[in-house]
Image (cartoon, rainbow, N blue to C red):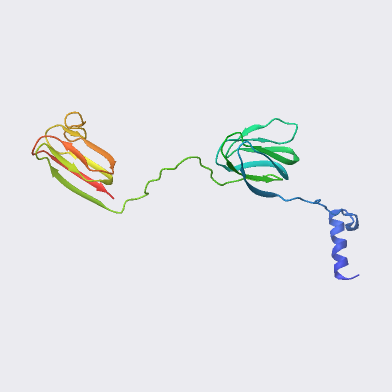
Length: 207
């Protein structure tokens, strides 16, 4: 008996089983796990997408559309970001465009249980700079009843004068800024501050 045979006998003694009795694991024939499809539906078009699946996710859509899982089931509203999962594998899915304009739909169909960590956002996203490249501070003095503040990504003003000042408007109808009061805002166009001649403002600008 060689070394390998001795080791096999040791394994059998430890496991209490004969290695020749072990069952071969057969996972079966697996179909495609995941596929993505993009289809532009003409106005009022019904389209059948033949691909076995047990989950369906809408990755994107340029408009409203409806979906049906089999020929004997009524269609249902479906939209970007929605997912449906089933206990059994279905052979196809039907898409319907109920509008008078073309709609482009992107679907993910698969068999199994997949998590999708991709972010789907509808509409525009407004972004802001995470930091500012520069900062400047200055003192302005009101003359002829007003002073103009120049644009910046972020502006902080403080009324260092003795009288009330007014931000924007045409004078006393602007936002009131009391002595020692501060105001913070983003500014894309020049802004006029109204007040008493000789009064001063401290201005901090971030760009």
